[in-house]
Image (cartoon, rainbow, N blue to C red; front, top):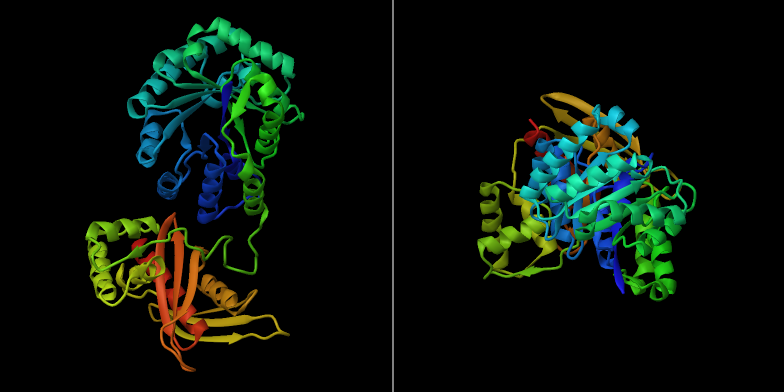
Length: 469
C-alpha cells in the first residue's frame, strides 16, 4: 500500500484570490486546522513583505505540530537566505524553488534560454540544500514543456540535491491516461527521479484535476497538491474521499483524518468565505486565546519570556525584564493566566510618550438608531476629530480613531474584564493590534466600558506610531 502525501495549497491560493483578505489570526487558524486534518505539507505563499511575512512564517512554525511547512523562494540566492531565516525554526521546514520550464514562460518570466536555466536550477538547488534538508523543485508549466529540456531540468535538480520534484500542469488540458504516460515516460528518461519524492500539481480548470491526480498516483507519484477551497486546484475533500472509497483497490492510502475531515474543511471554508464587515474594525476570528497556560510565582524569567513569545509578542530585553518584574508582583497574589499575562504586557512593555491624546468622546447608541462616535484626539497640539458610524458603539469608536490616524490596524484581540465590584465597577480593557505582522497591546481603565476601550485602542496606536518613528 503506497501512502500518498497531501500537500495543501489553500493559503497559497488565498493569497492570490481576487478580493480575498485574511487576517493574521485567520491564516494561523487555517494552518492549524489543516495540520489537524493530517496533511503532510502546508504550503505558504511567497514572501512579499520581509518583516510581516517573516513574523507570520515564524508563528506558523510555532503553531504547526506535524506538517511540513513549505515556503517558495524567488529565483535568487538572497531570497533563499531570507526565506530560510524566517523558516528555520519550523519543526519540518521545506524550501521551494518554482522554476518555469516551458519555452514561453522561461523567456517571458526569467528572460533565459534553456542552457542558462539549467545552470540556474543547479545553483539555486545547491544553495537551498546547504541550508535546508528538504528542498522541492517545482517545474512550472511542465506539461507544456519540451520533453527533452524537462527531463534535463529534473535531472539537474535531482543531481543538485532536490528531495522533492513536483511537475505542474498549469494548463489543465491533459487527460488521466495522458498523465499516467507522462509520469511513466519521465521515470524512464530520468533514472534519478526514482530516488526522490515525485509530486504533482494538477489544474482543475476542466474539472479533470482529481482524476488526473489519481492517475499520477497510480503512476508512482507520492505527493499530490490539493486545496480545501480554491478555484483551479484539486479539492482535498474530493481527492481524499475517492481514495477512501477506492484506495484499497488501487493500493493507495493517505494520512488524512477522515473523522475530522468534513468538520475541518467546513471550518476552513467558513474562514475563507466570511467577509470582514465594512462597518466594523473587527477582523474575523478576534478575541480568542489559543494558549491555555497558568504561571506561578515559581516560574523563571525564561519560562515567562517563552510564554510572552507564545502570545505573539516580540519585545526588547528591557521590556521582557519589565514584564517579569510586574509578573512577580501579580504572581505573589495569584496564578497568572494567558489573559493576565497579556494585560501585564500591555501595561508594562513599550511604555512610550503619547503621540495621540484622548480629549473627548461622544457616543450615540440605541436599539432604534445606528451607533455613531465622535472622537477628539490631540496630536502635537493640533485637535483632530473623527466621526463614524459602526455596527455597535465600540465599532463606531474604533472606526472614528482609524479616521483620525488614517490607518487600519488588524484587531488581533479585544477583551473587557471588571477590576472592581459594584455599580461603579472599574472596567479594564485590552486591545491587541497588528502592524506589519508585529503585535502591540494597549490597555485602558474606566468606569465606562466604551471609555476604557477607546483609551486601550489609543494606547496601542501610540506604541505603533512611536516604534515606526
